[in-house]
Image (cartoon, rainbow, N blue to C red; front, side):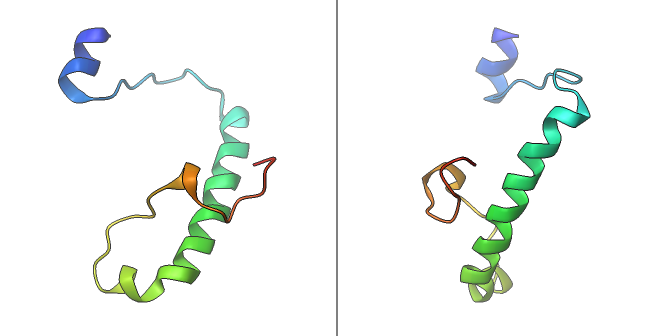
Amino acid sequence: MIDRFARDGFVLLRGYFRPVELQRVYEVVRCFHRAWLRDNRRSFRDGLVNSAYLTAWGELAEPD
């Protein structure tokens, strides 16, 4: 696993979380992305690749 991380910069652990555990993460990310799209619609339409800075942005509530 360490070799894959060193080579690829990430490790994929399939089945590590159950789908029910990922549902809350999905909800938070979806909320963030909708807010980001609202604020960056023009840039996204012009080719901006993704909604960066998920953990540094002010759109999510503290519990999220």
